[in-house]
Image (cartoon, rainbow, N blue to C red):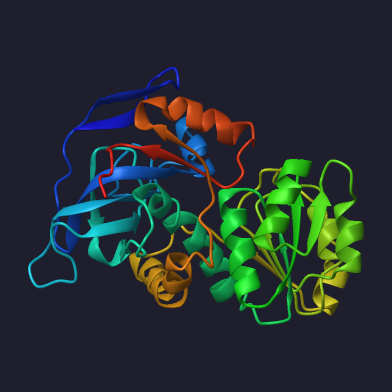
Length: 322
């Protein structure tokens, strides 16, 4: 089979690799589409290798058709599914633990389904499990027009939370307002901490961190939970620890990829139970910025690198016939 492989000069090539070998408890998935994530860019740069046991090529989520599965299990050949992966989705086939597979919500395409697992699972893990989100709380979401932001805004609104989010352009502001964001911060012109002081967050989902984190933490409501999932703005900041402790603020570091399969399976089961009907009915949107053939993976990476996307970018591997 073929997969997207990172060459020595960091170029991407659609090239032959060994076929996956299904282990006990796994299914074989013929990939039709694979979501692209910023983690793929980090892996391409050499700073974010896949967890042990996963293929070396990129791809944290995929949708396709099962070709082989354990007898007597939930899945059977021919099932249309999407899957959360530790790697290997940017290929023609991938072997996946059965518990990391979900049925495609009725009515959604393979492209839409491939954009669900990583974004919605990350949003659920952090807002619901780590953050304990409740109705009426204020949720601050960095990079609201990203794939994760798209999922997190809608999840927070589904829980009847107030959403404050950051964007980098007027087009992105319109996009997040359409998703339900209540307060939109233009990070190029607005003082983020000043806006947050007027809208004290109970939960923050932060992929930026960096020097501004300390000032923003001071705006949190008592007992707030600030969840850092990436450090695109830098890894260093100054914190006022006295204020931090007095108000009972929790600063949480969190990644999805490194979690156990048991934790991931719990998150995916929650998603299927709570969100699948809304996704199928289009009450929740899977916003696709662009779908590109897998051979144009470098172009997809460029879109994410330049932060031009409104929602998800997806690579198509095989044509879907419905």
